[in-house]
Amino acid sequence: MVTKIMNWFDDRLPLTATIERHLTKYPAPINMNIWYLAGVLLVVVLVIQLLSGIWLLMNYEPTAEGAFASIQYIMRDVEYGYIIRYMHTTGASAFFALIYLHMFRGMMYGSYQNPRELLWVVGWITYLLLCMLGFTGYVLPWGQMSFWAAQVIMSLFGSIPYIGEDLLIWIRGDYLISGITLNRLFALHVVLLPLALIVVIFVHILALHEVGSNNPDGVDVKKFKDEDGVPLDTKPFFPYDIMHDLYAIGVFLIFFCAIMFFYPDGGGYVIEYVNYEPADNLKTPDHIIPAWYYTPFYAMLRAITFPLFGLSAKFLGFIVMAAGIAIFVALPWLDRSPVKSIKYKGIYSKFFLVLFVISFFVLGYLGSVAPSPAKTLLAQIFTVGYFAYFLLMPIYSKYETCKPVPDRVKLS
Amino acid sequence: MQPKSPPNPGRRKFLIAATSAVGAVGIAGAAVPFLGSWNPSAKAEAAGAPAVADISKLEPGELLIVEWRGVPIYVVKHSTESLNQIDKNLERLADPESNEEQQPEYARNKLRSRREGISVLTAVCTHLACAPKFYPQLGVNDFDNNWQGGFFCPCHGSKFDLAGRVYAGVPAPTNLPVPPHYYKSDDILVIGEDGDVT
Image (cartoon, rainbow over all chains, first blue to last red; front, top):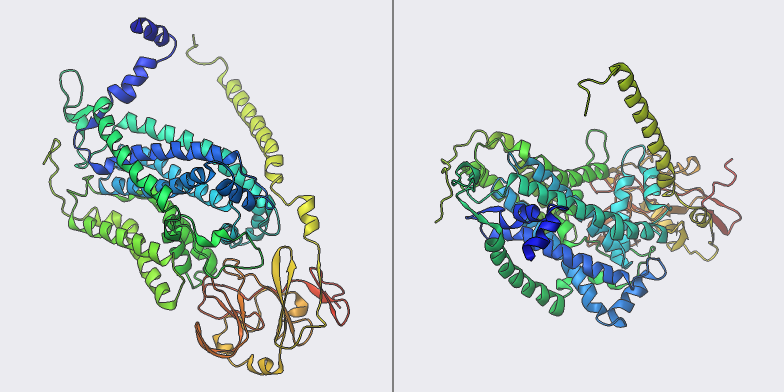
């Protein structure tokens, strides 16, 4: 009976083939470790964000007059409204925390190298979309920090020589950040960007299943196959990996719920306290600080305090910040190492990866506190450290001594 | 079934190019309303009309905040004391002569003002558009050991003097802009129009 139904479908839709290709016969390397959980958790968070977002939409009012009040309405009067909203705010932070871990995993194990360059590029696009989603969503509650974050970020475009001023008015649709701006950011946040994100994530997974998963040893598991053509050092994704993943999802949800229920502000990092005041275009908050997931790049923006090559400090800061985000996409072509995984790379690669991580965290801290001359200097130093990882990579990855990579996966 | 090569390949090529070109023109045309609708609407433009302020009650050393196009405009009446101090740290300023076009021609003078002793400044930091705060007191404070009075941006630490001139070595690249303005009478200041420029 079941076979009959499946056959009926299979004649009209590649159902069995799809299930086999993506689940029951997808070969997952046997040495995948905890770092490989971020991907599946990201999918879980995507679902959480879509559901909670749609439910928020049912009570949110996208106008300058009503936005702030409608958030308070959701928090106080809508049944379970506060849970739905905290789910969405916690989900936003979780999304970024996981994507940073996911990206770092790729950097550690050289997952961006041939043949996974395109997979990396598509993943980078999802990160860009996520940044845009984070920004547009952040403005919607129309609190003080919403308003002034929009002011600061949008005015960056005003620093572009010649076209900046007109471009700024076009982006805002007004001579200031107003309800008009709020409405367009709303449209982008709830329709265009999520649609694009879903499509791009879909392509990301398709590309992954085409080239196959990398692994902590960075060895090509497809080299040795059994008589059925199944790679030796792999196991089927379903049911084996799914079991690990379900366990991980359970643990993840414990932490997620702990924040959502008991610590939704996250000490001012998940929801900033200044945003409990309605937007006021005549009063700048004392410290404008972006959400934690942008602070490394914000520190880079502030680190540029001097004009250079006839360009203003402000425009240069914008360029450096944008470059800090954009440069990830170049990784597959910056890395000249013959080996993938950091396990077998030389001492320089290890040093620069550690430098990158330290720079990222120090910049993240500096971007979240008020500036001072000493902190600006520190931000400048670590901005250099951040970029050194990328820009010196063609040199240090080429001229270092790597350890020999085993032919097959080693299980310790 | 496809023929091995299309009959008359030249014509094929031309037709493909022509179709693509017409399609591109069509897409460009269709993009116009989508891009154009992001421009300020008639309502937004009307809301950008000039602002009028009564400055008769403004005392020396005081600051009046007027809203124009949703941004704060600072109107400062300088005290004699601050006017005496204002040129004491020219060497710390990035553009003391106001060479950058951050003010209308009629305000391109020492104190960047249309009327002697009154500064009209757009209180939007030229770094990232925060509103700099007014610190008229001279001397030592949190952010400067020899403060001559002026504006300090709390966001990223940019400093401006009382005439809105930017200090060197801060993130803000240029002086605070002077908005177009004129005095309709002794007491009435209009912000947003140049008035009679002669």
